[in-house]
Image (cartoon, rainbow over all chains, first blue to last red; front, side, top):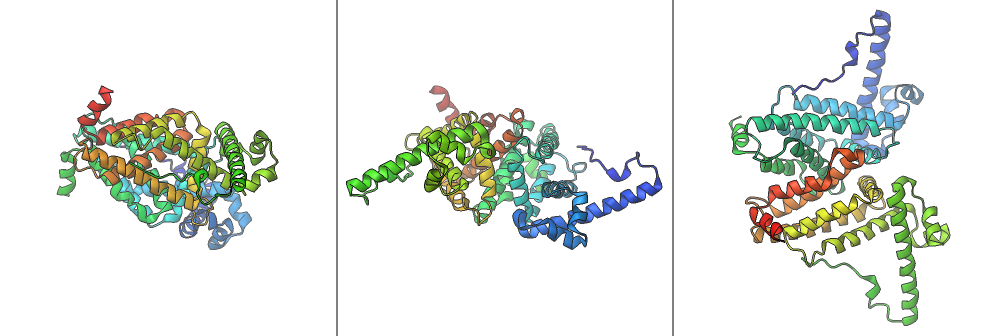
Length: 220
Length: 220
């Protein structure tokens, strides 16, 4: 599995050292804002968290923050992109192969339970962004495209390795896995006691994989 | 399967014929408002549809509408309750048994594709209602409770009839079926070309059911 993530800090189109210095400073500031926003929205949820709170933590003015993220949706999208990048580190798609990758995604689901505010943010913003004119519409369309592509690749590997049950279509299993996860999150946000997300995802995974995959997991 | 739906029109606590007449008139008006709201939101989607448009179709003032539904969320919740009742008629839980009931739900999913505005309304409102202080929070918590209960009953029947694969837990299969449906709807709203909801639901159902269920479906 290899998915390229754009790393703007190595952008070759910025050769001027001085400009590179200013660029690095801007990136560091954006990074600090996203880190603060992640904390604020994780702790207070999507609605209670405000741009003012985030600016205060970073030690800048609201106007200073809006220079980097022109509105709340842009900031929220930034937080979700940051979360995608962190999740990406957890699943290590270049290292985890086949069913192991899906198991990595379940560990991400387990981690997410520790930051319910971020899960809520994802759930609400993705639903609102279904409107074609929503500012985060393209982000979500593109996100589901690459997440599906990455997960399909993993289930294709699983099929090749005999880990997937017969007649299971890898692209369809990937589509279902992602949809199931989103739907379980909604039920969990509405009623935390009603559902254990990771347990249901594991149950689904067990249903589409062979004893080969189960034995491998047990040996490790 | 038997789930009682409250039918307020046969409420025995209203014996006075005159009062009953006024009550019936109020119910008829509410019904007309919900029918108009269903049309408006199905055609224009959640955001573009307005209370004014709905009032205009019914031929009443906005104030007259607000007398029955005090705000937009109350009206939207009313539309979703109305949709639940219609879906209920489609799946006929008292007639459809076991896997047949789940197949009925898939026919509802197929019907829903003809009213994307209502699917969008459901998707956005359910996400926003995850906040405990949202006016539709209790409606959605209660809705997921009874939908899960009803679907679990059907999969329990399926297990008894040998339609469910071994080791499949009916309550868990029900939970997954509902979550999968919601997650697929989100992906469909973001990109209609990316996913066929009914096809994926059928694929999931095939994965958890035995040849007994498949043979029964083929014979009919």
